[in-house]
Image 1 (tube, rainbow, N blue to C red):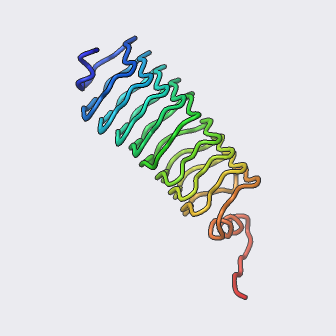
Image 2: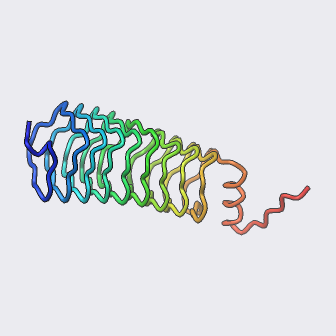
Image 3: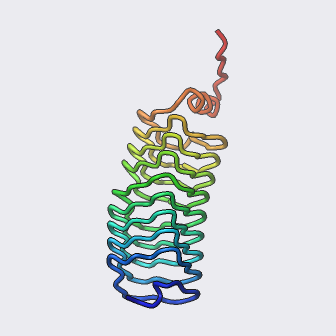
Length: 203
């Protein structure tokens, strides 16, 4: 296996085979990964800070309590990957394959997922505050109990999505597609008020 697996700073890694690698509690800073195969790899307590991933394969990989902070993912595949308690704060995903994907909690604050296909993905309980979900396909996605405060969902498709118990303060749902979307009373009232309704809950 590559010596880079022990952690690195400012390195460029290209065309390496990390299939099934175990990467535990190491740190990568400002590294560029291009065409790296991380299929069935596992990471635990690992930190990737300011790293770029070009056309990398994370298929069937598992990441537990791993941080991808301020990272840039471009045309990378997470097919059947698992993100368990991961921190993705400030990371950007462009033209990535993100389904099917298993997500267990985690802090995804300020993540950019513009135009991403997340249909059917379970993001329950994930911290998505200030996230950019513009134009994303969230059809049938589970966002139950997620923190969506100030998230951007401009022209996102939330058809049949589950927003029950999600926090949606400062989230403008007016331009999102909401067909058969499940939400609790608080979110429904907020949506009605966004459309100019005066809601009176008094008997």
